[in-house]
Length: 361
Ligand code: FES
Ligand SMILES: [Fe+2]
Image (cartoon, rainbow, N blue to C red; front, side, top):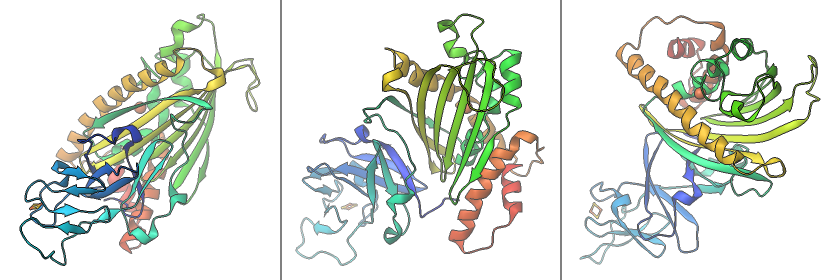
């Protein structure tokens, strides 16, 4: 179900601190992981499971670079090796816990869940984090009780902005709806990522910005999205004053230049953690804009959650329900097919397109 040889986001860097009790439990692609910082600041990620009796190490205590299980007191170094068994002199040979490669980049914590020797930092998706001084990026987080394939499909088809997000990111007017449901995009498929670029011309501002502009204001909106497996979604979004051009790149004044970076992380088959951000280029920021962008994502992702959680329940009730396909399934099909190809590659089996069809439709 999950790609093993991949980096999974374990949250924002500020979620794992030097605090005594900052011992953070995560479930990443079905595996229990505990994260803590050594006094040097380096993060350790190890299996959240004591090799003695499977107590949660995340209920343990930090001791310098080490973590002590607070059930029977066994102590583990940052390499996962047991260094102390209270009450006995010898340490059993198998007394160690698995450690995972960890990298902090763009203020995200990335954990490699596959074969450690294959961990390749070049596979970490491009993003812009809140620490980048050229941008004013604001962050947030949400838990969603839905399978991550539904999240992938949701992010790979933005026609839902006209419906799910009619009151927030999209619009409930005929003009906006027409544009979002007739998008013509340029699609570039890579080994583990799909890039989608498109323009929406001469539309009213998204609903959450309409109060800032006169009713007749129209903008050209540029979307440049890179969607990377397992599920990182980065959008470079720009808004230009519409000047009537119907061909080529927008030539009106650039009024907003923003990045939103989103990591959807499967905990297991039934839920995800969603770590996301949005913000403006620093020199185009006006006070309050980036906070507004982050706040509207908090609202919009509650709108998605409402839909996806209900959909997830129904998918589980009737997994073989004969669903209908429409034109807007093209993006989700493409992304899920890429996921299935990588999964099949790891399983050593040949990829069958029918797998994607069955999972999606
Ligand atoms: S379960 Fe951890 S020391 Fe016993
Ligand atoms: Fe959405």
